[in-house]
Image (cartoon, rainbow, N blue to C red; front, side, top):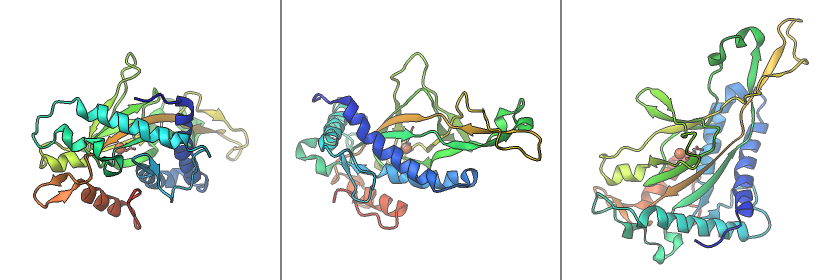
Length: 282
Ligand SMILES: O=C(O)CCC(=O)C(=O)O
Ligand SMILES: [Fe+2]
């Protein structure tokens, strides 16, 4: 892998994600009511904001003026894409590493590296009498709505804050990182693998919920309700995660029944998510 200036690299992803989320958050005064829908939208926007390292035109959050972070992002994406696929043994003949062979050019591959930043946001207001002995009364605020990833699989790193949840049946189960393993990665199965294996391997539905900051209960004396029970505002913990969305080459037939290629499946999925999808990279 080529040397990458990690500061610059992080800045680019950081800017794109956080500004998108901040923009989405700042326009909405009634947070509790709107956050789950809003964040569902903003997350899926982020989901598609970069493809093969190139940002979509409609992503208004600019990268720093230097083109380097963009190039570096593309380089890292390509390198990780190779690492994540070429060395693996595969149980299924059809899903072999040649399906990811990037010597044919990165434009044919939708593999994407995404750096995600979830800024601290106000989660709501808690009254003293609600708070006492009853933390669980705070409904989770969903930062990234329930979804399965689009590609073959995703390698996901979340920081110490946590908040990732996996849907198992009707329940949401918290996925924590081992505290002793600061670099632990999660492998999420995506929809392409589900299709490719004709349903034998299911994609995983997951979401991200906000975690309240430890010092979250900031007293706000400006809020007094009829002179009784001072309110306290609750803020979420800022959170970072890194996701490598691994896709096969665009022209790989992943739906053998209907002869659809990876790029067809991806575009169809984008079309369902957005009204005017338009593939980012043609
Ligand atoms: O931030 C995370 O931990 C997960 C994000 C995610 O699921 C996604 O971008 O598809
Ligand atoms: Fe995801």
